[in-house]
Length: 496
Image (cartoon, rainbow, N blue to C red):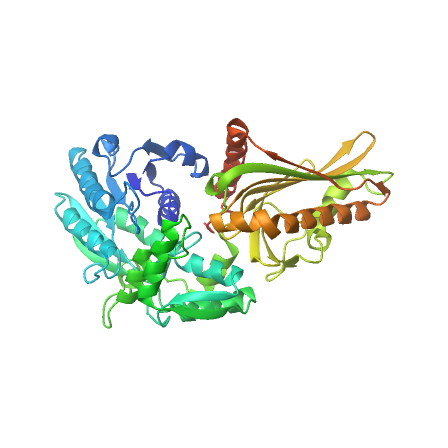
């Protein structure tokens, strides 16, 4: 059958689209940026440029579709995008579009605890449920617990805090319970909800097999990452004020004001309640320990457009004569001995047995002074070049390319860095100690590669350039294509 998916590019949506394609369905994604995001979609998925909060833009999007899977929603308001306009009005517009086009089934993603929650987000999702129940065809309302997966806005954030901060802030006493669900488990349930005719006009709660808390997750992430970050508690009221204060000065906080409110409400299936993940959909849920480990290894790429400020290109290169290795041999040596070639102030972690040589799709975790752990993903290995994309939690948004080539009868090893600061705070750090640290790391690596090659090497040279809009657009398109290729190969932001 043909399924229209709204919100098909977020954590839940990306996994749901993959699940639907695996189940043999045709998928159309309604997205504000459908053209730009299409390179990362599975083959055959089509896009429709539209915004659920703009009724005119979605008209016709459900033509020819059997089911609408409505995942679009926001958990935090922003200028022009409110709970009313997106979560409530957007749902109403999609229901009307589904009815106009003769769609037979409407599946709506709500939130566990929506019927009792007092946060503005939960209230808006509960109103959305009432809108969906007025649909004249079959409908389903699914209330999942906190969904976690690569790039989610809660569990992934805690992971990044443990990786990068000496003190990890937790809200209140850190013991507020919630019952997270692994994104791929929910995606499978959504695919079944779309196609099962016996499921109609009903509301189901879905969650993972275990309850957890901020404190529990921080302890688990300490063990996974090998970092001993100290916990610091922040009273709930102060946390809410702090979030607003950071946003007021242009700094994106690690947790939203809505999430602060929802933590205090609890996000669990009541004792004696029915978990539809197992009882209705028959899905064996992912153990929390397994999901957290996968999450630690699989954060999403952080492309140049995800950063702030100017896009810069930095080059570091060394020329060699009379080397004992030729270009092909030196490139293979780089892939096989990457960790050894990094200078001593950077520790390349090998928690699960790194693939040697480095291969496309492999995630590399490094420990660096000041910033803690960072990650990159190998996106390209070919013709004497290897490209890595930075992942969420890295201080930079961009790509690093390593090149080995024949130049004027000798060899050249070159490192090209294309970067924006990931956040405003990271930009401040990079303008001070971060830039000097980066210079030392790449200069040191170039020197180590020259030593490994043997022969006579020139001093390491470097240059920095700020790219204009046209050049920046070319780099962004190139990085997006690499990320899209990883996603299509199942090696990016998800295991399926």
